[in-house]
Length: 89
Image (tube, rainbow, N blue to C red; front, top):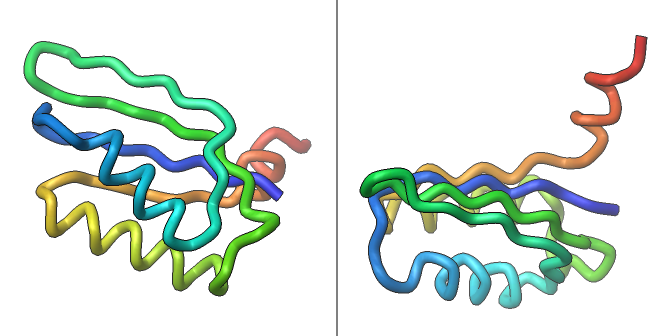
């Protein structure tokens, strides 16, 4: 199974490293990353594999979101099922 993680916040050193380390702590494998800096705002989207996730998905999502708050970032983890459901009629 895959998830999408979005990260938005004021640009600073170490955002990608911090989020990547937090993913690794929970067994989340990063498959693809897209990032850009718009003026002074950092924006990143990650596609991740959670087949080896060490905790419940909701626990991971809450943890990564809390990490974002600590770092003054908005971080959201969304299960791929949400996107698949949005595109079905």
